[in-house]
Image (cartoon, rainbow, N blue to C red; front, side, top):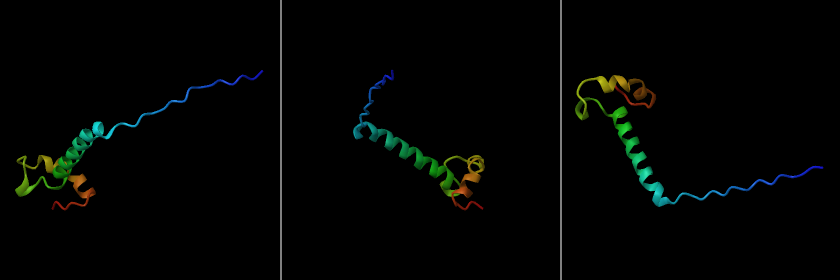
Length: 69
């Protein structure tokens, strides 16, 4: 005799926007900070003295199309 096994269907509640918004803003600010360090952390706009940051993100600069030399 073949007996069917019923599995409960899970229902997912959407996450309210008011709970997501702070995380989306935080993630956006982190992305802007990363974009600054990859794209503009050099020369007159440099926050960190020396070439350490430039050398660390050098290949990423070329990958994203930023000129650096």
